[in-house]
Length: 322
Image 1 (cartoon, helix red, strand yellow):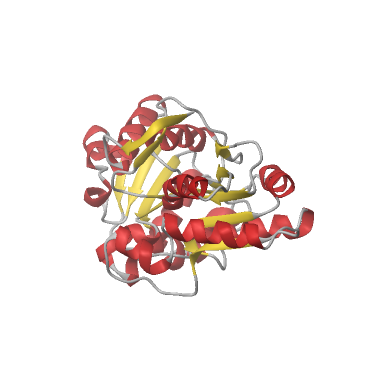
Image 2 (cartoon, rainbow, N blue to C red):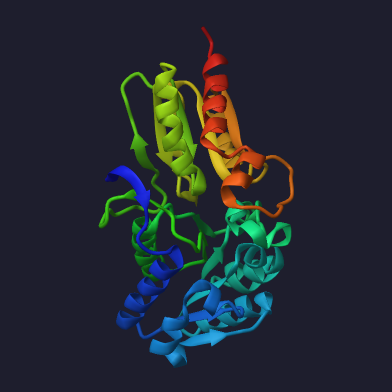
């Protein structure tokens, strides 16, 4: 269930993450946490204090950290492993693939500061390709929680489900979209807006979920009725929700804080082209590197704001056959 009004979360996502880790660890003595010299940045020092023998700082050697986690998992441990998203994906891909997925390990990978939320850390720390890299690895589940409520539900699933999983996570406070206590099913899209006579479906993830909800109001003023799906699981993708959206509304816009080349645009297109071809427009990063700036400024620079989603929706509707 979504909130009646979009409001800032009362705590940062990293704090919600740490609180949940501690709660899970209280009930599972095998849960361990690994980090690459970022426990302070990720807010997991309370976990270190509570469970000093179950928290491992591997230093700035992300690839080795993933292999250590994979080895621990094969002894029965349940490792939650964190570093910044570009280093979990670009830097550690071979270890994620070989030590993790290929070996059938049980590792929960968390990549923080995704896309434009890296802000002033700049282009070297601003991943627009992490979800695409992870989506390409066999057996990997790929998730991007929207707010702390979803994070809480998703982490329950991660801790209780064997396998390789990647979650990209904002560290700072997010906008609260869902009522506290709402539960989610990994692999199933969350329907945020569904009105009779919708002419286009916006399929969004992460940062772009809130921007899509803002776009709905702007589109209403122009007489365009919209469906909005929160596609927080990129793999396995909810193909049924995509096919139904294409069939019911006849046009689709994807919106993501990620490269469209390997991201949500690509994943949704793979389904649409096989099952229900309709006009599509993509809101996301187009073949560009990251840069320094505040998130709102970067959203405008990369075309990820509500106004960009509105423009894309209008283009998609205009392309529908008469």
